[in-house]
Length: 393
Image (cartoon, rainbow, N blue to C red; front, side, top):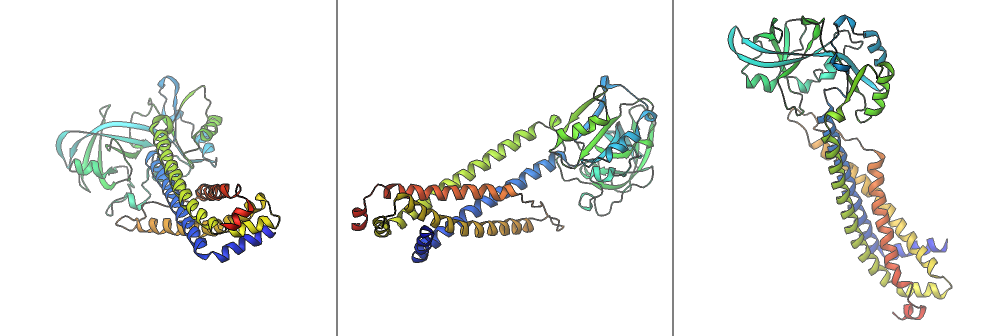
């Protein structure tokens, strides 16, 4: 109790040093928190670019067996959809072909693939799966197709090939069947795609479904929990009959990018902690040098080195806690303001901030441990000086 009272007295009697350390803690932990929170945002953006509007798990038959549309087990798929981890599940088919006419004008074939969904989904969520239910992904003058002859096209693809809204296109599927469509809208999903020559459609608009390579496309509520989701799917679809492919296998670069980014952020955090340690060490050294006589008197009164160390530990603890609380509050406000500032021209936020407990804990531990280490390093010399020498200094 005496050590705590002495520590409090040191804090009160040295307002300049106290405020300087508090300010250093606020800046140190605030900057570390902001960088870590921004790193979490970047991780989420990379994850979104990698996993948005596509399957996280895909099931195909072994040996690429072809089955008829009538053989698809929709009841089993609907049972799978009841699992909390599963967001969407569709039987799908890639329709390959090309546009051969635009507004009845023949042209060189323009390759265009359709990702054809079944229309028997329990939640009819193919719009959400493909991102077509979000206003920011749809051109303002577009509409969602409601009839069999209406389609939407990727905005980049349509612009590149001079296809306008309302255009009538003739599409030749690879088996030779001819279909006529009206372009009723354009979409821009805002994520990188190596190939924009694809769109979405109801598979029942096409013929030749009796012998096709259907796949089950699954989206998870939490894409990072791919292994857990895969085990759930395997409970419904026996693994000896199907091949399972995860998005992590399709995009292995994600783990490399994620590791590289996290390693870089960790190095920055450590560097800031070292800089903070040097600054606080110099402040504590100066503060302790000013208190040599008081430390000598404490030792003369029977207090040993451990008691002196405990006194300065309490002093550091109180000052650091105040700085940490203020710094984390300031860092939270700063990242929220930054997120609010970073918006698209239409007012939509470019990213959302989701702060986890790790975002608070990591900078807290780094700054707190650096502060304590600086305290003990400052006291190392004092522990070896005799009482008489301390009082004389």
